[in-house]
Image 1 (cartoon, rainbow, N blue to C red):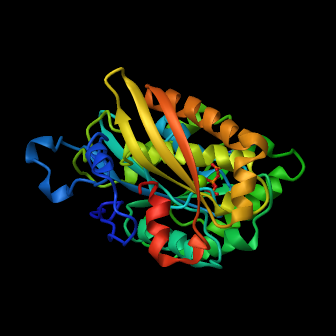
Image 2 (image 1 turned 135 degrees about the horizontal axis):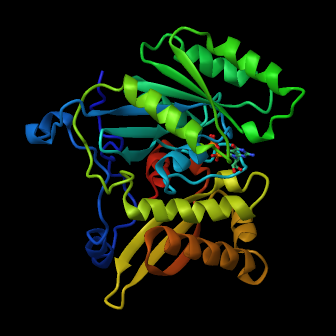
Image 3 (image 1 turned 180 degrees about the horizontal axis):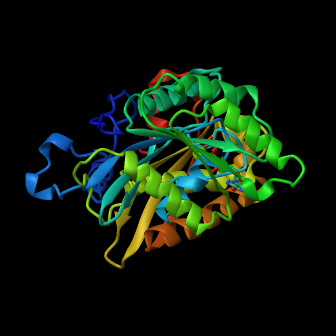
Length: 347
Ligand SMILES: Nc1nc2c(ncn2[C@@H]2O[C@H](COP(=O)(O)OP(=O)(O)OP(=O)(O)O)[C@@H](O)[C@H]2O)c(=O)[nH]1
Ligand SMILES: [Mg+2]
């Protein structure tokens, strides 16, 4: 089966304050890479003999290192990462193009039991990825024995009729005593019909990575190169910028505040002096969160802003002027009207 649906479905407009004409103009400045081409519209001339392509859903419980692994496979920062669980909130496409294949990795939110509307949205994102993929990469943290959450993921993917692979991630943290037992338990959890295990980790050995890629590519269908070879994600740059701001908020904030944060970019303009001007809003759920986010004398917001600016400059290759605003949007995580929009990073 070949996936045919764009990752980013069109968003429903919702009523909010009208945007300024200036903001509207600026919207066109960004490179919009948000829709996957329809495979059926690909010119036959783009079909190379034996070229393989397809979607690989990268799934697992929260915090096992799915996004870190996808970034390592792509060789670019496609998805933000953090030691706090539930970092990834939507599907994120990482595109790997080789002369013989194009692998479309779909990073997904960690699978968990949803407690509020945001979590339910995240789990729908996982379902979309699973229902529309050519292969599954199940990522686990092998430094600890399987948990109930790992079992739930295994049960969810078991009936799906696509080739499945398991990445035994965080192998660098495996100690010699528990290591073999953990590996055996994950092996049992996964079963052994047409499944393959790979060890991976922050110090992912290049040969392991190559082996994983070869095995993945071997099960992908013959198909076209859906995206141009230099495109590594389908996210608009402004959505990427919003995520990079959120990454720094996750890094510096503690307890429940980071989970209540969403970031949207309202203006994204490359000025004639080649400075990229970005205006972004950090949304929080309560006045008390706003206070924490701004910090004493604005120190916290300044810190998040300057680290995020540096990251955006590094990733997007432009000098950046970043302006941050903080807005309280009460209980946005429970409010269906806001979730998709705030999670998309674009307002
Ligand atoms: N030691 C070690 N740490 C890792 C490895 N892979 C990821 N991490 C760390 O684990 C944490 C979680 O990584 P992420 O890539 O954000 O995990 P994730 O599975 O995408 O998490 P969610 O999006 O929340 O589901 C981060 O602090 C990473 O630096 C690894 O192989 N070894
Ligand atoms: Mg992630």
